[in-house]
Length: 330
Image 1 (cartoon, rainbow, N blue to C red):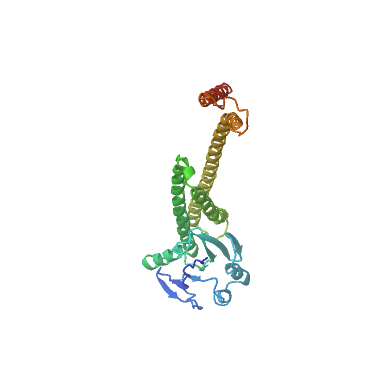
Image 2: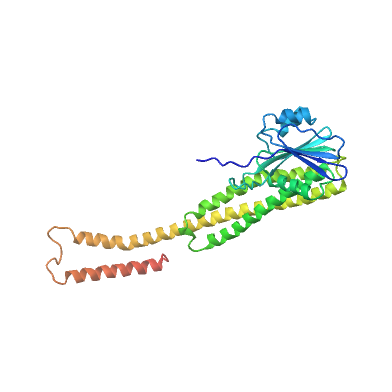
C-alpha cells in the first residue's frame, strides 16, 4: 500500500507597512521583522523541528501557545492567552495526491500587531491570501487577514460539499434504478461516501463552535466589521454542517433501501422455491414409488400405463395449484 504525499507548505513573512504596502520574505529560518510596521504575517511549517523555538525566541510567543500551535495531533478549537487568541482550523486538501477529506490543519495566533499561521501541507487558502496581498491592498488588521483566510477555507469546504450533494443526488437515481441489485459495487460506493462525509463533518462541526465563540467574544481587538464577517463565516459553516448531515442521512436511507430491496428479492426467491417444492414433492414421491425396480408395480406391462401416470400427475398438479390459490399462496 502506497502512502500519499502532499506538498509541504512554504514558509514566509509578510510585513504590512503603514501605507498599506507589503514586503514578502520567503524562508523557513527566523526572519527579522520591522516593529515599526503596521503588523506582520508569519507562516511556517509546524513540523519544522525548530518551529517551536523560533516562535518563542523570535516572535514573542509564550511556551504554552507555541506548544499548542506546533502540536502534531489536534482538533479545531480556540482559546485566549493574554493579549492574543489561538485558533485551530481545518481546510480541504486540494493536493492531487491526496483526498479532499484529508483535511489540512491551519494553526493561527492573532494579536493586535501580528498574525502567525502554521500548517504542514500546502493550503490553498494561504496561497490565495498571499496572492491577494501581492496583487491588491492587504487586510487592514491581523484579525481581518485571519477572517479572510477563514472565509476562503469555508468557501472551499462548501464547494466540496456541493460536489458531495451532487454525488448524493446521482446516488439516489442509481439506488432507485431497477437494476441496482445487480450493481454489487453500489453498496461500497455508499459506504465510501458515508466515510468521507463523516470525516469532513468531524472537523467542520467544531469550527462552527469557534466562530460562535468569536461572535460572542468581548475581545477589544474585534471591530464591528470583524463581528459581521464572523457572523457570515458562522452561517456558512452552519450551512455546511447541515448539508453534511442531510447527505449522511440520505446515505443511510439509500443503504436501507438497498438492504430492503435485497431482502424483498431474497424473500421472493425463497417463496418461489417453496411453491415449487410444494407442487413437486408429491409428484416426486409418486414417480419415485413407480420407479423402484421391484416386482408388483401396477400396470407395468400395460401400453397405457405411462399415459395414465402422466394424467394422474397433471391432475395432482392442478389440484395443488387450486388449493394454493384458495389459501392465497399464489
